[in-house]
Image 1 (cartoon, helix red, strand yellow):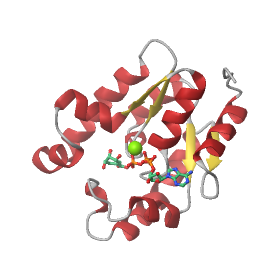
Image 2 (cartoon, helix red, strand yellow):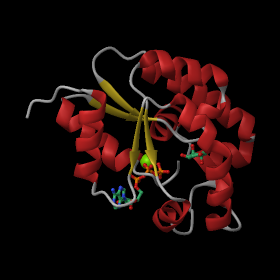
Image 3 (spheres, protein in one colour):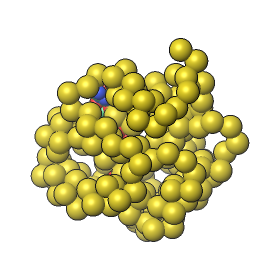
Image 4 (tube, protein in one colour):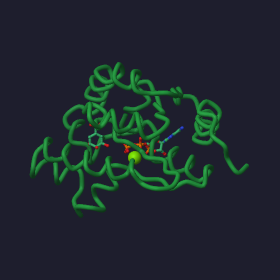
Length: 164
Ligand SMILES: Nc1ncnc2c1ncn2[C@@H]1O[C@H](COP(=O)(O)OP(=O)(O)OP(=O)(O)O)[C@@H](O)[C@H]1O
Ligand SMILES: O=C(O)C1=C[C@@H](O)[C@@H](O)[C@H](O)C1
Ligand SMILES: [Mg+2]
């Protein structure tokens, strides 16, 4: 979910594994030169989701070890889910909605949170939990953990080898 710690924890995990880190939203910006809200508000959510699916497919087909931070809405698409499932270990950074709301603050740059960020995040979280639960091979409850502790849990749970 938004604010769960994908960028923070994902890049730390990548460092530990000697892997690359890619983030689906950042890849969209890099490829299109446009931000998430620009695409969303100018072209609509379906256009954004189509771009997201393209970027995700490319990220998942990269050669070499890669940690991919997948935006929380991408897995609502069954085609994306299947690609993700086949690509490797799926980690759900599970957080309470209050934690997510605190971390995203005013929700700037997140079209789905406009209006009432805390209420919107709670609603999206409730809707999506079953999908995340079905997809994830590893679940880490992140609320009380520091980023390095989250990484430790992922490494242990997924049986990933690190250089130290
Ligand atoms: N384990 C943690 N403990 C405390 N704060 C954290 C933790 N992980 C991330 N944060 C903080 O929460 C905020 C969101 O983290 P981050 O940007 O990594 O999340 P994200 O899942 O990538 O969010 P986004 O939806 O923006 O992509 C940041 O301010 C980050 O410093
Ligand atoms: O969870 C979502 O649906 C989203 C998450 C963000 O990272 C962006 O991809 C966009 O704001 C939608
Ligand atoms: Mg991020």
